[in-house]
Length: 188
Image (cartoon, rainbow, N blue to C red; front, side, top):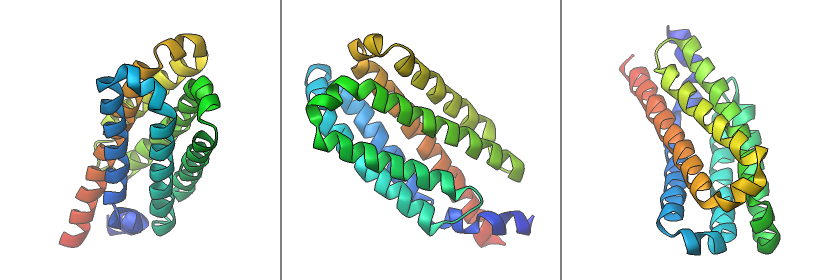
């Protein structure tokens, strides 16, 4: 069992970075639901900053915790950072294409979440099923956004808010699971 911990030891040292990512996404989701009219006008800037900060945070997490699948975290961090920069550069165009940005980012994050849940199952000590269900829910929401961007743009505020709250919940839950592992490692 100690060898299983050694494989992920670095990944769990900075568990709180995933907590920060989750809080950022939940705050974005709640703000979007609370101010729907203003939200659509301001979405490009708020989301650009959210993507930018969460992307940078996730890259730091990946680079400082080179665990078995750290490449996925790095790629998702880079993707989030690039999307944030693109949204900041051209807010008018980003409002038109926002459902696609959000949909593809959520799609990639959900796939990463399913991979992470499967990896956690391999360690046999985490509640990997909750992680998997949350990631699959994010995947379904991403398909809704990508399948019909016209429908999605009408409802982009609601869909985006729900998607970010789910994604934030996943990241927070995952960070607490990493924290549990961190405590177990300190006890040994």
